[in-house]
Length: 297
Image (cartoon, rainbow, N blue to C red; front, side, top):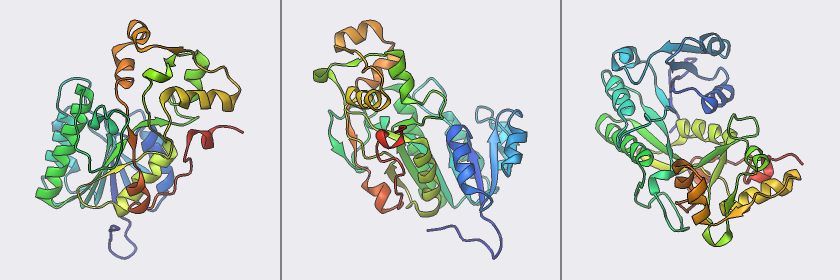
């Protein structure tokens, strides 16, 4: 249900982790919300103020800096990633403890990952599938989801979990699919290839805002576009649309010899995300249903 406030009073939103997606959310919100942004550095303070937000200095790795967060907001948008090591997410644990010191928030939206499912053998499925993380990176996200769901049940928060695949946008640093094609980075041969899922950063920002208003309590959502291509076919489509050479194809054995463990981890999991809940419950109409819709024509 939408957040209700006193007449003429804007709802209060706290954004945790205002990177590229957070900035896109800020542009969508305009002045409809009173926004606070937690940041570890003072560097973005001026830009945040210019965007209409109030910056707050704090660090999820130092719980002593989080005391002012309690009772500060009606809703929280948690976009901060877990730390880079370990099976748990102490950052989310510290955030929950800080927020629980006083009543509120009524709503919390968490940006998780579709990696919590592990390898699904190319199956197409909805959010009712049990999580089965296969990497520490995915375990940390599953831990954060579990902590937030517990907080929602115990403290009366309306928690929405957004399970997000690969994020791209032509103006996103490190997220322009054309860059990989231009570099000639290889993809797997068809018989070794895996299904991959994607979402445009602008559609993800719109899903975050929709979840703030319409997310159901303790509910997960696949924030994924309509594409159902294997990874090699996905980048072939990017190459063809942009008049670039298709990426070279290599076997899985060849990939294991030339790719990093991180790169290989993305080639070891195959799944197709059903996004009907995103459309029916959050009422998100994708601006970019497939990567082809985002590419220049």
